[in-house]
Length: 136
Image 1 (cartoon, rainbow, N blue to C red):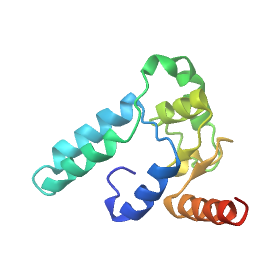
Image 2 (image 1 turned 120 degrees about the horizontal axis):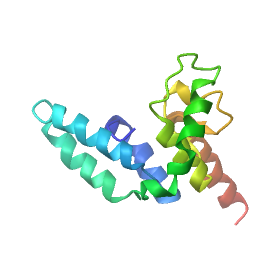
Image 3 (image 1 turned 180 degrees about the horizontal axis):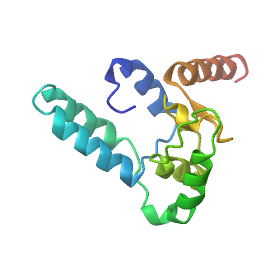
Image 4 (image 1 turned 90 degrees about the vertical axis):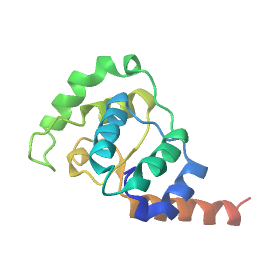
């Protein structure tokens, strides 16, 4: 999601209303992607660094014990049916912090854990703002 800067307005809304957590593995993945984009999108690295400053990156030890169970859950998730466990670190981190997942990755569907697309999250935050204005 970090590299989806075309959704900058969504980022701004979410960052002001929610705490964003990033797994250690996600930071490594982002760094690798930025390395490959450095010639084609020179501003991507600066944009990503600005976003990373807004996020918390907990120690892997906080969610390490849940990685195997998260991988099993992803492997058995009926919605994706591809058996991919590459994002087990994200699911384990979400469990450790009782946090929802913000991703367009279908692998999280069917895990029994809440995940949000950018559009649905932006809409939910808009509804939340409207409700708080109506009921201060």
